[in-house]
Length: 472
Ligand code: 6PG
Image (cartoon, rainbow, N blue to C red; front, top):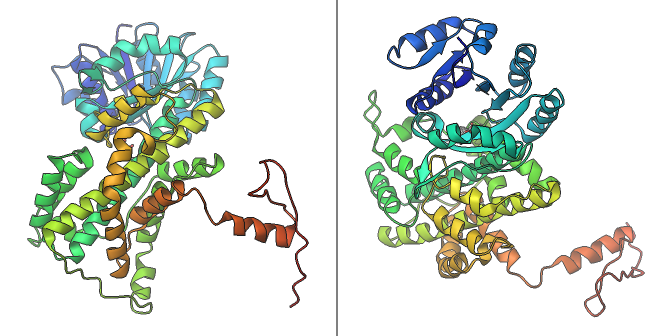
């Protein structure tokens, strides 16, 4: 019977949880998985739900009401194309395919054109919130034609998280805009996570126990740093390893994985000449962490100070709070700057206020201060940089002394703080009316006659000096 409201292909945990979420909002959902046993087990585990398990793609497609709404939750890259290829001969004009994975936005643009040319409709939707978010309410970032969004809106709005009463989903923009914004979300997620790790590393050097760390992060989560990532960090510090009795965090090997969205963000930032130094530091910190053997070998070769800090703990907590919050503002300022730049470049007309608003709930970077970011862009949609919004400008002015002290203290103790210092470096560079690029331009003109503009002449006039020859 062709009567399911929604279909989902790919029953890994995210897919399963999204299905249960959609079903719980009153929709009948058809499911298909390459391994039929997974489909059977999933449907059998939920006998009282309006689920239709299907054993072939044909059966799956036939079970859906028109226009069909088919969400694909498979690994980004080739698998998405493979599923689309096999759907094409089976579906009808006007049917909608939604890719809910972490696809590269340029792949989404290609698929948008490919399917559009064939008369099908395509939505590239970033979905954030992990397994729990998928079940209880994720943030969703759909891109594609506005008319297709209108068809999907009731389902998406019903399954999305709610923040301040508003669903954490909005039509982001055309083509690849949804997956693009999800990519930046993930880049910001990388920055947030690294900044938290640097705070932890400083506290560790000052002798904080896991229990003390749990208290610090719990307290922070009750204040202006309230966020999902701070909250789960507090929970992590409370967990004991059943095998050893040690805090579980001490038993986890210090090598980070990454699937690529952070790297994509950085590559896109460089292509657009936008500085995302905090996210870059976060990506590089993961790379350095993964070089475990080289680091262990170098640790006995390359010297540094004792990585211990003697500081008043309460005072240190306050200072690191300020450094973390300030750096976090910088990270978001950079990510949002990149969105603004790409929006203009691609004519996407992205609404930063709406994007910040849907990040307030459901997603991994949800945080109290996204209310303030939302307000900043709602007040001034043309805001050139988040740092300059009055609310954030005042915070940065207030935090900067402690921020400097934390970066200096850590640097003197040999504790790596690449994201804290990249953020501070950006702040100091951005607020410098004069930078040493006059010397850089002199060097360029010296060896390559690249010319320079002068401080005493109008912009756009270029000069060259006959520099002396250098021998040797
Ligand atoms: C989310 C997460 C999700 C996933 C990332 C992790 O928003 O729900 O970002 O998309 O956990 O892919 O990325 P890394 O494996 O690169 O850390």
